[in-house]
Amino acid sequence: MLPLIFSDQPEFVCKDHTVSGESFELRKAKGLDLLATFPRPDLDRLPDYYKSEKYISHTDSKKGIFDKVYQQVKNMMLSRKLNWIANEKSGELKVLDIGAGTGDFLLAGKNRGWKVFGSEPNPGARELALKKGVELQEETSLFASEKFDVITMWHVLEHVPHLEEQIEELHRLLKPDGLLIIAVPNFKSYDAEKYKEDWAAFDVPRHLYHFSPSAMKKIFNAAGFLLNTQKGLFFDSFYVSLLSEKYASGSSNVLKAVWNGAVSNFKAKSSGNYSSVAYFFRKKH
Image (cartoon, rainbow, N blue to C red; front, side):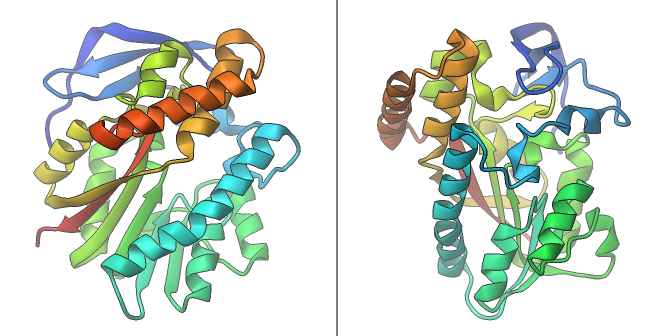
């Protein structure tokens, strides 16, 4: 993997709006369009930053407007994600979802006849998944002898403390010519540039790394993966803009947020810089 050396000076100083209210710096990697969060919380304290009902990927919450929007968008995207995979890989697939949350993606894949596996460190999320009939492991090291046709990480890589080790683990788990799909926020998008330090997808300190398309291509190419294609996650700009407006102004400003989300998607049609991007890699060997 490419060596990661970060500047001593921050590009942004961002606030944790979800749990602690603490401020964190985002510093740029030298020679790479990649940001990282500083200071990084100790690993034993990091789970504390996820202990909030606002962190809905672990709760299935539908209490407020943001929760409802999130869950509706998640359900709309499920079939699209499954179709993306089916267009790339056919047959009875063996699929691993890392950071599987409450298991909805794997449940949908299971209903398509795929053999599904997943990992999720949060015990509450694993319990919710089990109630849906999806058994998740705490970590991928428990798949010691397994190899997979498809591995997915939907908005997970940005949370990983040890990036190099995680990418090596992906290479170990994926079959030759296997498909790796990684979706992450894109800080080169219009909505990121619009909201700057208030951009909700920075989500410090839960997001430890912040990616651009060029960084994703360079990092994974150096680790033995070839980028086949990338797809924008159309709805993310709207959801992220809704949260960002609230962080920036203290109120929802729904119309303004929707406008900024729409402008972001319009500009991304030519630039490719969607608010979030799904990258489709093939293992080189």
